[in-house]
Length: 112
Image (tube, rainbow, N blue to C red; front, side, top):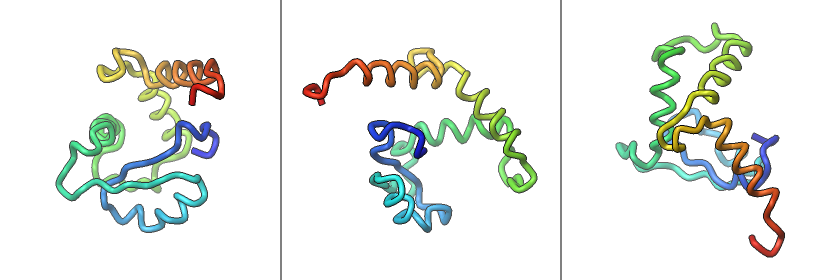
């Protein structure tokens, strides 16, 4: 995430899983706010829930991730980022990111 411009990494919202035990260090390293969704409130992290569903097509629940190579993970990310999404007006996440980056670069300092 450090490679993303700061305007794209202002905050993250997570559920309350143990994987976020070191959230304070992550927040400090990336200079961002981390928010936690309320328990049993999946609508507070809708894109997260949708992405989990898409990931399950490639990585079934309970899979040992230590058996999955970084190349395989990169391939999955490439496939998911190239898949059109209804919430993005049928653009791909890759296209949506490019549009956001282009729009940001066209803004002048006084616009923000």
